Figure 1: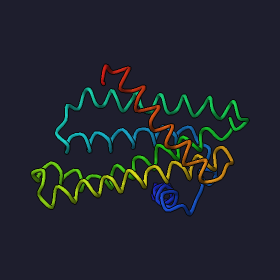
Figure 2: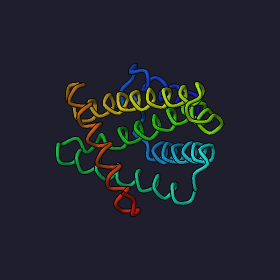
Figure 3: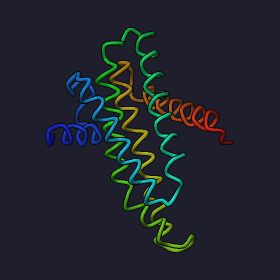
Figure 4: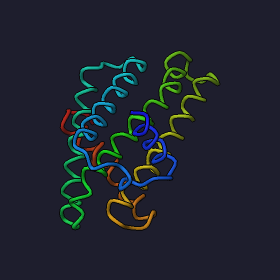
Length: 171
């Protein structure tokens, strides 16, 4: 267990690529479960209705996995799906875990207070780091330059967020 968590940590620090993870369906399911558990923790700290947002997280993972699967199949990288999606889900879980202190600051401090503002800044920083990590994983998955991986990650984020909002009846 510890070597896998270290591998996710090293992925988030750009020291490993998704190809360095084992191509294991069990590890993929574990990563997805870990992502959902950390998301549940983040939602409970945020004080939002957990049931509807958990459905959104499940839908996010389903859409992300589906898009990644078909994009890799279309580009000839189909065999890299398990490792790439494992890396995305595992790193998402780790970064969500790191967001818990910032969410705690947001839930306890009033808007405009320095602790609240610090929480906002931390979350913005984590969003940027999350996009960079996704770009790192996707550049390896699609064998492209980092800049193109970042473009894919940003488009991927916008598309998944938009689709989830539409499917759940959001704005």
